[in-house]
Length: 202
Image (cartoon, rainbow, N blue to C red; front, side, top):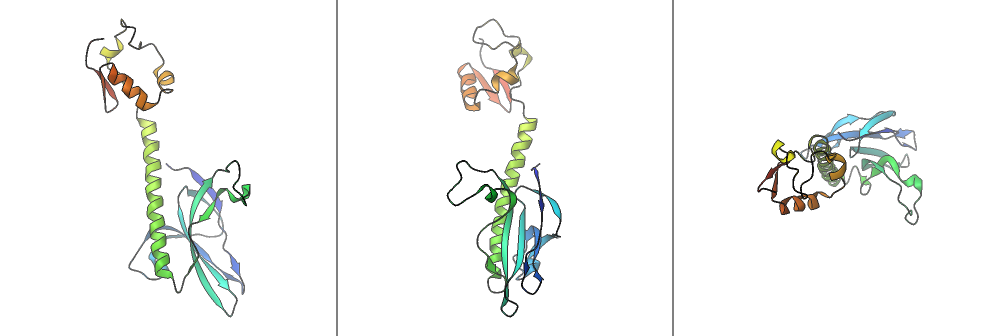
């Protein structure tokens, strides 16, 4: 499960007391050419528990009362660590948990179709990232480092064999996976679905 990021949502106030709105987008309908293309939950001005990678669409009033127009932006929830050293022109306030804009601001009335497709692409990319993070978390929590058969645990005569009394979790965790697999194969052991099988006598 992706970590939760608590953020407060606020809507920009433009001239003429016009306010924008924001929506947590869960899907995009490519057949629609207006705001109904974005399915999801409208966000009120309060705190929410987001997930890393959540996608939010904002419509914001721009211009003056007489020359008004609306912009569309897509934002992604991120918790960016502060780099060291800071890039030129950046401060620590430019990082941390927040909604980060992705791409330019689109004119809602004249560029909506391009904006809709941009949101769909960003949503797809972030979904793939979220699924990858969750898959890694599940594997880390459920896959054992090494599962030895009872026969393998009983082998202690050869100096090249690791005794079963050693703390595997502590010792083997320090060895890169690829190096561990190479060493096991060199000793006549195959690794299959997390279990080791002795191929020859030690």
